Length: 302
View 1 (cartoon, rainbow, N blue to C red):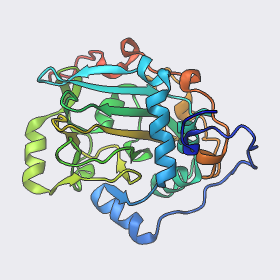
View 2: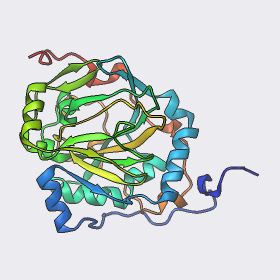
View 3: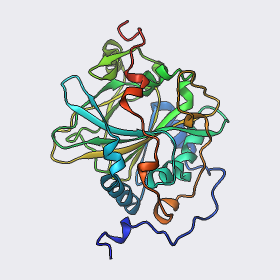
View 4: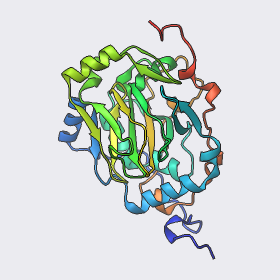
């Protein structure tokens, strides 16, 4: 018999119930207004303790995450580590990405009526003492290289798998900075960083917020929100899962994956805990040499 807690077992004897075609509205009008005002929204207890236990244990145990992780150097040479995949599958992270509670808020917040598609998800692995920083950037500063046309039709949801605080390098955001539009980006180490003149001007004008989260809390944020994180100098890891979504109407003219234009096959929230889950080895992981964000386009130094 397995010595793992029952929380972490996959329930092969439980058959999936009918799939969900349309997500229900999950956010209040006040939450939608707050997102539009500040460019982000924090939802406490977005995932239950049991869901987080299963997700985190899977991330630790499934070799596919480790074998497909990318190391990116920050400006000091410290490494940021992430695993990124495109198509949400029948693994536990795919069930989270495809769940009603993820897709419902996305549908409410994105600017349009087209179906919600999944661009990619990534597991962020900031290890104790060695996990590097993320420089100031907008996600659209990266995705502009994929030639997505409309930043208002792109959004991300980050779910904390471990505690995130100032000691272990939690996310920092500039409240309201999504209203700046796209800021010029260039290379900062192996990362793509925003023009620091604009960042410093934004910091003089808008509030800096440290996004401290408990495991299971979620941060929903606009593709043009300026954000960064410090290196993890603590003795505790900071791991999170970030799923990025796109409306099908938002074409990307320089993106080779097709996930971004395929409507999400939505599943009920209970799939995360109750449905039998496949290994992440079936996922279509990004290889570092294929990342368009790391390729020169000619405008980075301008």
